[in-house]
Image (cartoon, rainbow, N blue to C red; front, side, top):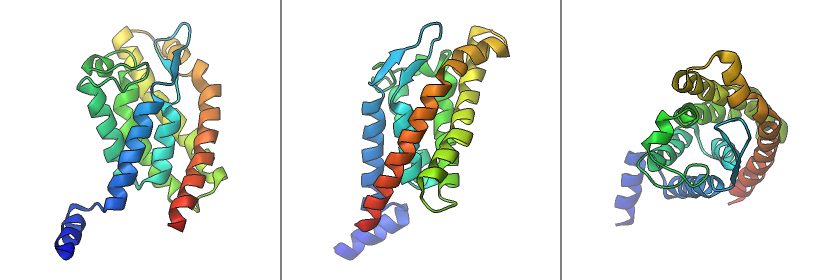
Length: 189
């Protein structure tokens, strides 16, 4: 019986440890999204979710990161109130901030790929999150705002990116710190 279970896990490509880490990261994303507040003059919210997304990318492999973040987006799209501000529904994906949601699985997978290229250090994780993760995330949000709100690039930058940059850098640094600590803890087990 024990051998059968192990072979099924290997064929599926996930171990129990992988699935547990994915579930914890998914729960972290859902809970952290509730820690959010509006920023005046923008449809976006300042949210702790960005910390959870980066930590997920640092802790999981790129494949597991993509699946986990995609599962988060799908759960929100079908109506579970897991998006920032306790919202959910397909309307969020089709609204002005929809590009953020649609881009997250891809951006987080890219961050995960780059994070795994070197030793897990705070500096490396912070560099990847700030130089790659933040700008790529903004691309999706800027594009969706331009399309949905029919505004130009300058206005979209002012609504989707510029006011969020200082906070996102601080959150990226915090996620790098947490990611290194979690990976060190997981390596000991």
